[in-house]
Length: 402
Ligand SMILES: *Cc1c(COP(=O)(O)O)cnc(C)c1O
Image (cartoon, rainbow, N blue to C red; front, side, top):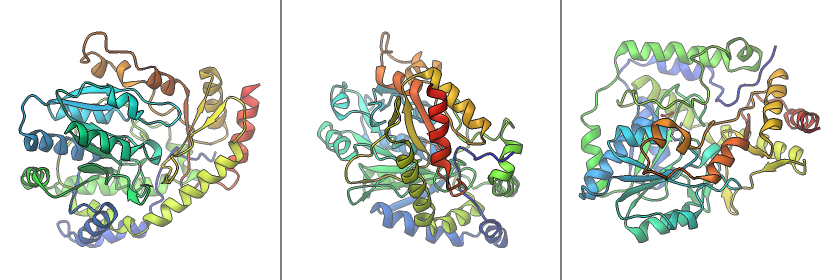
C-alpha cells in the first residue's frame, strides 16, 4: 500500500551518480556548498561536518575556549527540541539548562528567556523546529545584552528567513543538518556557519585536526543513499517503514556519533542539492499552504502561525490537537490511509531521563514543553505528497474528533 513518509528529500540517481563519478577524496561540490551557505548566512566561515550534532558539539567546545571563562559552562536550550541538542551539549562537556517554550509558536518565549539566570551561561541555542523561524531577533538582543553566545540551530530550517535574514545566521554562529528528515539530505551530514573572530579561529584549529572518513564508510553511505532515493517514494516507503534503522525523525538520546569532516561523496551531493534548495523549499511551502487552507477552522485543531515577516520552509507541517486521545486516533487513521503523520519528539526534555536527572533539583516544571509534547502533530510536506493531502487530512480529523 502507498505510504507517504513523514519527511524527506527526493534524491535522483543523478544526484548520487555525480558523486560516484569523482574520486573519493575530490570535492568539486565543496565550492558550491561553501559559496551557497556563505551567501545565505552572510557569515564568512563555513565548515561541513559528519552531522548536525557533530557540528554543534564542535561549535560549543569552541565557544567555551573562545569565551576564556571556565565558569561559563551552561547552555540554555528550548525545553522542547531534538534530543540531539542536549546530547551535543553533554558531549561537549557542558551543562544543559532549559527554557520553556510557547506551544503557540513552538519557540522559547523571549520573556521566559529573560527570566533565566545568566550568571554561568555560555550560550543560548534556538530550535526553529519544522522550519518555522523562532523569535531570533529577540534572542539576539537578549544574548548581546547578557554577553553570551547565540547558536542559531537551523537543522530543520535551511532556507528559512526572518525579515531579510536567513535562519542560521542570527547570533554568532549557526548549524544546518543534512540528515534523512531534513531540508536536504546526504543521509547524515551538517554544516557550521560562523562570523569572523575568536570563535571562528578556535573552531578552525579544532576542525583542521579532524579525520576524513574512510572509503569503506563512504561506500556504506553510498549504499544507504541509493536505498533512500528508491524507498522514499510513496509506492515503496510502505514496504520499509517498519524497519528499525529507518528513523526519519530519530528521538533517542545518543552520545556516540562520529565527529569528522563531511566525506567527499556527501559534500558533492550536498553541493548539488543546494543548487535546488529554492525548488525543494517552494514545493514544501506550497504543500504547507494547501494544508493551512484545508485545516483552518477545524475545532480542536490549532495551526501554528509563523511570526509576521517570516519565511518558513516546513521540513514538516506542525499543528496541535488539543486532546492527546484524539491525536492518537488521528495518527492511527492517517497511517491506515498511508500518510506519515507523527507525534514528533515524545517528551519535554525535562522528562528525558538523561537530561532531567542532571538538572538542578526541583527544576522540572516546563508546562509549555509538556503541553507541546502531548499535543503536537506533524504532517509531511515533501515533493511526494499528493495534491489532495489537505482534504484527506481534513476528512480524517473530522472523523476522529467525533
Ligand atoms: C536534527 C537536528 C539536530 C541534529 O542534527 P543531526 O544531523 O541529526 O545530527 C539538531 N537540532 C535540531 C533542531 C534537529 O532537528
